[in-house]
Image 1: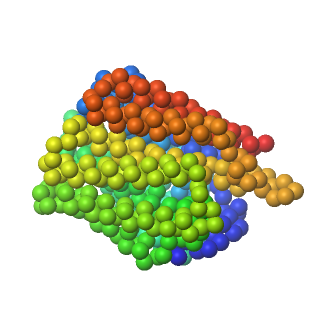
Image 2: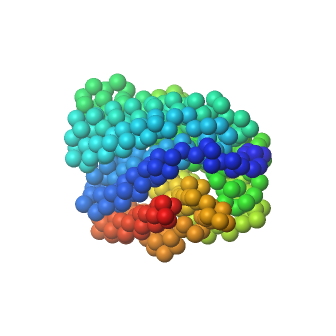
Image 3: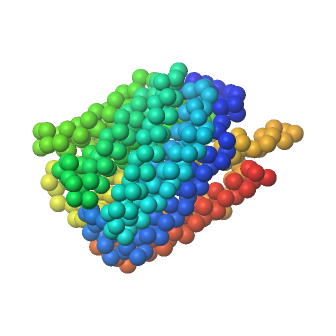
Length: 420
């Protein structure tokens, strides 16, 4: 099995102070709100966005750095010690890098929105420093991992991807400052592949082998097929890197997304089998968001394949970016709506009947509102790009902002009940 049975046993002794993971998650909820809100004033430039500083780039990085990576950092710093049954490395270091990363993301995205390269460079330096510290903590934990080869394989691949994503980000920042060290198309290709699909994608896929069986009360997927799926994802990243660097680009550029689709498809099959075999196979709206996330990721790979083959896809760069960011965001929010009550219950003071159930800490009304708004905003954004409509982008931003505020209310209620 991918994760040993009973890995939650005695997990309380391996928890970070509640303030650390919830600080990451709280910051992610704020950046989530800002990301949708930024689309309203940036509506005119969004449908045909193909790169460059401005509000569309800021909104994209509010999602990737502010929501996805922020949540991935908080979740991995907490869940890996629990899953690998080893003590937390350094709570103080985790808390410090959280504050530095928060400031770095704020400065980076503001620099993008205002087209201010100096502010962008300062924010990028803080962000890179915090992520480098996180990489050190992640490596320390992965070195001590035992009995979780599937999660460890995804973790090490995400660790390597993070290094390459940081290197390509620094290359892009240097180019914006007038000091190019790598051709911009190569740097952009490497950054997209290793930041989105590599670091964040592999972390999410790896933790799914823990979270989906845990939520469905099932056994983890078989080790062999799970490792094969991880291997296919890693191979797709390697092919993408070679193609971005101009090595056999005509062959490797379309092969990379094709292999990526194979890896994603095998992962989805494994997760669905694990869910269906569990004692609690119906996971409600949260798992609908997970499935929407899988569909978005698959569609982004299909658009990448079409672009590599030279097929005419209208506004392909903007469509690809929306599908990739929206797919990862949907997948992560579906997981986070389960993780937050679970961790809140773990951190709550046990009563006479033991710790509270996660369901007792879940505010269903805000989650229901967020669910409808998120799906509506995602659909409106895709329609806006397809129809080249700034009005639909503004509508997507407005609906998404309402949904993000509702998700923030869900998070606030969980925190309040945990403290109470």
